[in-house]
Image: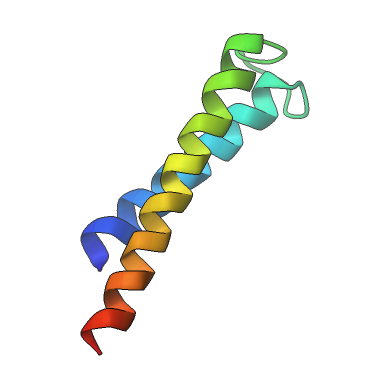
Length: 63
């Protein structure tokens, strides 16, 4: 469970941050307003959410 949840939460948070910076919601970095980060961010966010889902599903299965 933990080997999926911890990286999932980290990737989800980083993906959300990159998405918000890429679309210009969060200001103050070279990533602000960049379409590259507006594209990479959601991909990383989805990977993080999938890892969280796998971790939760494995926990339910072992109970």
